Image (cartoon, rainbow, N blue to C red):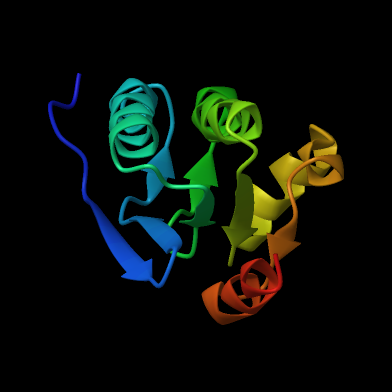
Length: 119
């Protein structure tokens, strides 16, 4: 099992951008991502999160589970999450799983930021 993950967190005003710099978002790293997101959302008081998927080429159900965890945490705190820049395969999985019905998806981080700035 992988012991660390490559990610970065940027702030844009009251918006946090979580960029996963991994090609595969699967069971090997999903637990670590869940841990990082839980710490970030509970300790930093973040109410607006953009999950930047631009580097992710492959995602499975455990990766989606990590995103759903962030969604549930934010929903409980009356926060908001946006997905940004998913590649074709990841976007297809999101559509098949029908997560696009509850998770707004944008083609770029900039578009997601603009959307969250209106809230």
